[in-house]
Length: 306
Image 1 (cartoon, rainbow, N blue to C red):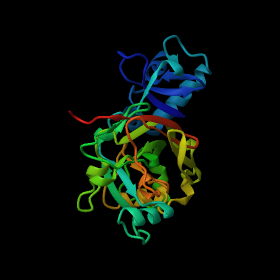
Image 2: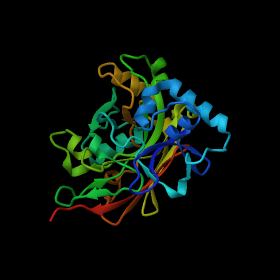
Image 3: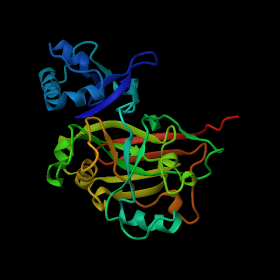
Image 4: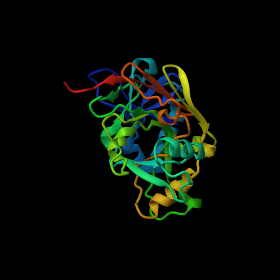
């Protein structure tokens, strides 16, 4: 299933939806019409676990495309929000997780040329998250080196504490698209959180595809364009540490909980690694895609305070 969070109008509250063809189906309204009780938020559905997804699947099977009045709206008429508009915790970011990106970073960002022996982990606060179409903020008083990174986002479905690599993927709820925006000139004594954790630095969406539809997350093409020009293109099979490695490693010391998000790293082609270097500026439009999940499109806007 493809699950979304959306508004049917500017004034309407955010709703949890499931995409069926060109419709956004209101999960809570559909379940109520059929005598069931499903949540109206993505985090609520994640918390409901497998029984919640099974109930939703049963509801969709029952109606067989004939949706009760008031339960479905044309996708073209809704505004998609970030699938989880406000994560409960910081996003787990993964640095230097594609071999070619390690090499380009060593040349331009003073990182080691040697491949990491363990995942490089940082975090992005919940306030970094913006939904499809929302602007990426450029504050020229803070940065002159705003960069892009397309990534596969992994959403945790069940608590993972000290899990094995073999068991890791069973804890995944689904997958999405994220752009890890980075102010390269904002690293502080080697620490990345201010560089990567500013407001609007985690565009996220357009949906979460449930894990049953992506049994192998290591075979997905992903790419990114700026102003229509392709900057990144790779495949998740080139990750240095695969999704199961990341879950096992993080959970060895930090309990992963339902709704947690892992941004699994970016391939080569970032602005800092290009010759000459390239950066995002107000007026640019950044588009990121992960195969089988979808595309997010974001304008860069001037957010410099007067």
